[in-house]
Image (cartoon, rainbow, N blue to C red):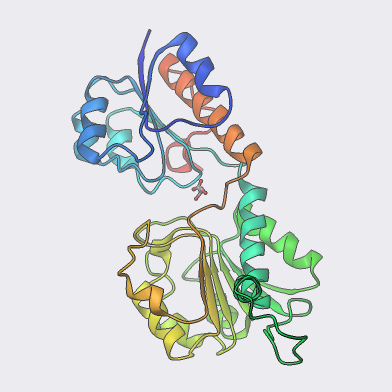
Length: 312
Ligand code: DGY
């Protein structure tokens, strides 16, 4: 029996299956283990099942001599030093596919909410401020016929594109930072939606210069990783009216501390990283993460090995 440490209870039956075949410890708290607690657990574990909020860096990997596999419960794996793991022959897995549609749904829900000011309007109604039908109340932006700019055309970006098409939007897309399309997209889009992994190349991809290219009415949507956007520049762009609004599922750091100046910015909607938060997606993610652990412990290729290890 191998030793597996799981950093949080997960929905669905997958963990039960894991604990039938391996000595499985599931972190019982509602808040994650600290870095030190995770390192201590990793020290005598053969496998780790981690969340996107768990930092698995080179030092932690070095302190885990038995480790064979790290299965991240997320499609993103920027929390893991994959190079350090690869150098030690440790397989790293993620959970793509399972959350594609759920995350694209959330991105589109953010787009709709920001365009039509749904949270503001609902809050106002609940506060008893709904006095009459108001010709100029909560006027927002049209979605039909508007231009949706999608940056990052992986699974989730493509799923977002399908939603945009279904709503009669014009699409502009670009894959990478270097693409000459990026400036064109930023200056033309009414909505800009980010679907890129966080890497050194995409860190602060959307900064002062990029925000300045956007229309004053444009809305930025981010369901990828907070670090893709320079939040100081974003707060400024919102406060000065350089862009029309932002709707974020992800921030840097997470959670965004109450004192963060971004909270003071107008026309901002933030939700607490719920892109994949449907029962189906989260249970399927658990199934995949467990399958990755089991394969890694057997020394077999992981069903979902991260692209940088799988060579794609
Ligand atoms: C992921 O899996 O990387 C998502 O951000 C989770 O919502």
